[in-house]
Structure formats: structure tokens, C-alpha cells
Image (tube, rainbow, N blue to C red):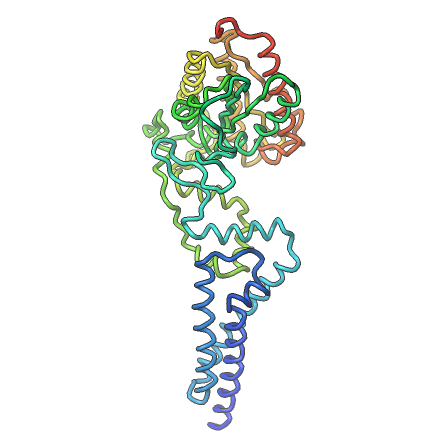
Length: 415
């Protein structure tokens, strides 16, 4: 009986050793990049692969060499561990050869972001946070770098807002404006930032935007204020300090597992494809607006929003800058979903925009995107407030028309 048990343990050790040696070979960086990687490897990933391959190959070699001394139970545990790892590597190969390029890019990005230095945002001493993305400009915005000095023949439009501006219409607006005129060169500067509220844009306008001497400012806010709403009694702060905190690297308790297991990464991506937002929420947002319900009934929480928008307008008019104030359109078919609270908030902010217009008479142009798109062009929305490419063109076309009409009938107060 003892000899049979020894033989079984010997066979188990041999199988486990072969499995470990195969895994170790696949983890060799050159082999891994050729067979399993679907994106370029970071230097730290290559270093991890080198260490892992050496450890696994060495473990397999020692197991094979001393197989007669290894308890059968331990060999079976090592064999089971090897099967799990090999299954994950096999799934990685399936991802590489059969998944769409878009999904592979997303999965690669999920792993890339598990390294704190690679998250999409970075802290800012006054603006809370800006983007840390190579394709963005030196200030952290989705735009090229522009010179502070504006050429005489250039008409500059500065677009302020959240993600609906950042990844939205400004580039298309610039194209449409330049196609409409042979004598004027238009520059449309994108100062939108995902998750920014009107408070962020107000500070950014005073610190950054004015330095570019814009001829016109477009204010496109009204969604992100939902983040600061429904504050517990006695906690609301008009500087939004109850909702936002200093930028800090988000904690990722499962970061290592996301990094090393493609099966886990895929499942997590499918469950929550908005990982980018989760990073930002963990890094700067300290308030859950749904913790006290989603009724958004306390409209006094929007008085700072009124103040912020008014401050931007007032400073722009002092600088003799034309102003377009927009309402925020949204997908009305989602009003009864989990986005219900945000839809209420958007409608309340739109009401404030209409009220502000009465204070400025003809000095400010209101572009009512809400009435032109909400419920009329629901098919042009990707979610509650972000639009498709067609929706971006719709926004850009409406705003281009408003800008050209404003230029054709200049406001005498601003001259």
C-alpha cells in the first residue's frame, strides 16, 4: 500500500512539475508578449513576468527533482494551482485572438490603471483635479495647446462644462465655424472636465480661461451639481466642501487581482464598465447624493450654482466677452430609471438658467438645448446626458448658428 501511495504521489508531483514548467515558460516576457499579450507591456509588468517565470520554473524544476520527497497532498495542491493559472492564461489567449479591439483596449486599460501613477486624473492645487492623459494638453484638457497670445484675425470661443463638454462638441464646433467663414479664423478651446461642477469651472475661468482672452464663453453646466445634492441636515457647504475632498490616489484592494487575472478583470469590467468614474469618485468625492434619497427637493442647494454661473457671466461681461448660456439636454426616456434624481437636478438647473437670462436681458444669449433636444432627439443620447456622435453634431450645429448670429448683431453694451 505504501508503495502505491508513493507512486501516486510521484505521478502527481511529475504532473504538477510539468504544469509549472509550462506556465513558467509562458510567463517568460518574450514568450508572453508573442502568445498572450494584446497590448504593449509596461516596464514593471516585464519585471514582474521575469520574476514570476524564474520562480515558477525553479519551483517546477525542484518539484521534479525532489518529487519522491514531496507529499502527494502538496503535489495535488500545486497541480490544482497550476490548472487555475493555466486556465487564466488560456482565457487571456482567447481574449487576444477572438475579442474585439475595443474590448481588448478597455481590458488593457483596466490593468494599466491598477498602477497609481497611471490613473487618468491628477490633483491640482486650486481646481481639485485635471486629466492626466497623454492626448490631452499641458493644462489637462481635451484640446491642443494654444498660445496665450491671440492673433488679431482669430475669434476665440471658450467652452466651459463637465464631461458633456470635455468629450462633446467643441472640436466639431470649431470645424463648423471655420467652414462658415473665409475671413475669420475660429479657435474653440475645450475647457470641459468630467465630473466638474460649476464651482470648478468658475475657478478655472478666473485662473486659466481669461488668460486666453476669449471673444466668447459658452457655459454648459447643470448635470454634475447632482453630486453635491441631498446633503444631510446641517452638512451642506456652498463651497461644495461637503461633497469633494482633496485629490488622493484611490485605493484599489483588488488591484493586484485585476492585474494578474484576466478572468477576474473581464468579469469586473462587465459588471462595472465605468471604472474610470469609479477611480475619480474614490479619489475626490466624499458624498453620496443618494444616501438620503433621490428627491432633490431642497432647491436652496442650487443657490451656489446660481452664484457660480452668475460670477462667470459677470466677469466675462466686464472683460467685454460675449456669453452663451446653455440649458442641459437629457434623455427623457431615462427619467424613471436610476437616473431619475439626476434628471430632476438637470431640470432645476435649467430653470435657473432661464431665470438668470431675465437679469441680463440681451447681454447674454441663452441657447435652450433642453427644448431642442430633450424628448425630441432621445436617440442621440448614449445615456442620460452624454450624446452620440450625431448628438455632438447637433449641439455643435445649434451653437455655431448662435455664435454666427451673435457676431452678426453685436451687443452694443460690449462694444
